[in-house]
Image 1 (tube, rainbow, N blue to C red):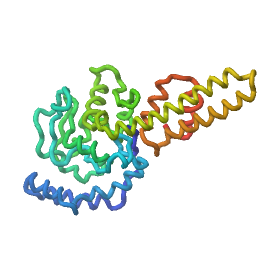
Image 2: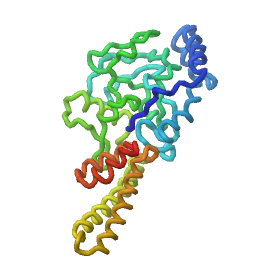
Image 3: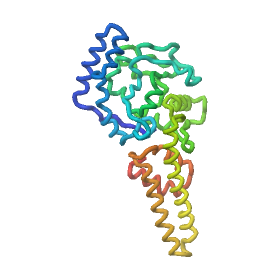
Length: 292
């Protein structure tokens, strides 16, 4: 999961349009009417943001870092607009809510801050789940108390949240190894709810990228060792290894570009190798280029 900065995203005219639809929702007699309103195709104006959101993430799902070749995109309502279900069947975590909420966060249906870009399957699997931390306040309708909720799902629009997820090979895991920590629990729930560890096409796509990375890493490691063994002894062999090493590092750095898939998996692999040459010749350069 890579951080998505929405701070500067303020499309002209959107708030006026959103206010019109929110007013219509407020005039609905009950939730059944609201659901009918939200299901009307001409009222799904949140889809206007798809292309712009794709540009923010370089054409990748905000939750999985996968491109649309894995699945199509949808505008995800981070706080569900038509009801909230409990995740008891998804995780042993005891939720703040004690019952499902049939109303959901309907008043945030057109709230720009509630929109995320999700691949079809993660969006489908997340469905109406929105667990809250034990002791959190639960938002009331038509006020801003939702901003004070302590939610459990990792949010790609919160930079700190994206650091709570890492990888063991191609498998997403919790960055905090303490299973009792709130950070570990949040990551564990998010991996399950977003389907990051069980969508086969997603797993296969990550495995392909990881194999390319391993190949580049192995070549770079061999060339690094050849450089060290031939330095001052065999200038020709040293130069050949140096050129090869530079090329290998260039390929790996390119895999960290924001427009590439699964960059956080790539970064986790490189950091996990714990090699000084990786820090000096790959990570430092990637940081200078603002890839990471």
